[in-house]
Length: 206
Image 1 (cartoon, rainbow, N blue to C red):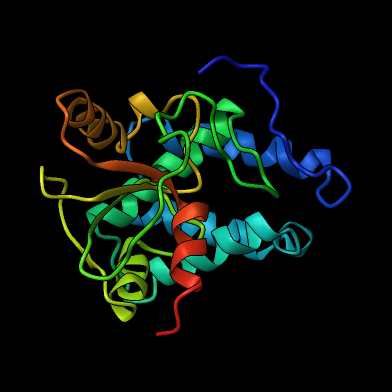
Image 2: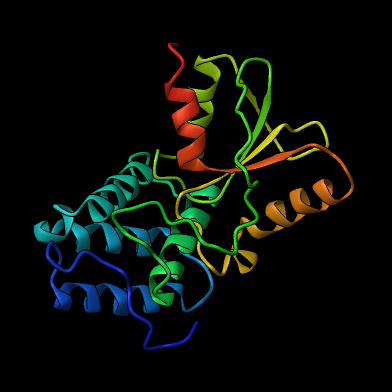
């Protein structure tokens, strides 16, 4: 990532000093290429001590997510990866906070396809505003959809809201590239954003 890039925060709600502190903290946490339990606990305490930040929707959700990850006193591999990707994007100045972070480089289907949920197979990748990946999968199941790993039988690949211009280098990149390869081979998999998926799901009564 290139230093000097600026986060697109709502500056009316978050102070510049707090943003600079978070960028510096994120730099340190991702420096070794991973996030461990003590680092997650430190981030949780840091956010808890800055109520002004937590009044902002993104930071409030970040704090709630870290707290949820640590509820069982264990940070599993998926949780650690999601948290690392989030902090890495903060370091790179790639978050569009307060609105959907839709990068123009994401290979989303255009025009957006009709989303049929019942008896369709979905795969989730990336970091989601809705919650943990299992929360997305549970919500999908409640309206008749199924989820699993990315295969040629997958109907929809859903990319988490916090995807950035560097998606190829994130943990989600391999799945996205694989889905693009499938499409190029004529396999009809749809690549959609989290907000678009969520609108379709929320239009269905569970």
